[in-house]
Image 1: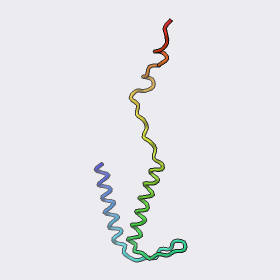
Image 2: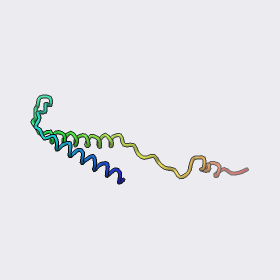
Image 3: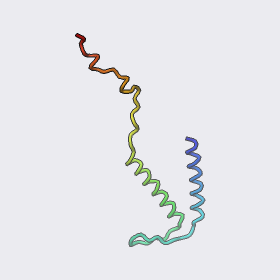
Image 4: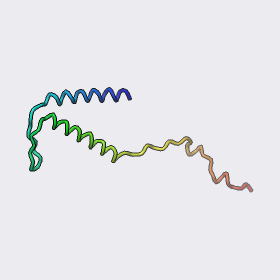
Length: 87
């Protein structure tokens, strides 16, 4: 768990450095609209959208964990054999 936190902190620091170095204003064309915004805002929004879509996709394709069994099938006694009357 600690390794995940360290890696996440390094990625956040690198992302912050990358965003802070891109301060220009750009024009973004999307279909019939055009927006002027700072690259900082653009990169941050795209990163946030990526995280949100990642969580949504992870939830959609989330499979339940396999059920752990204490006994194997071979170790279980046959119920019919216990109920049969010996003649």
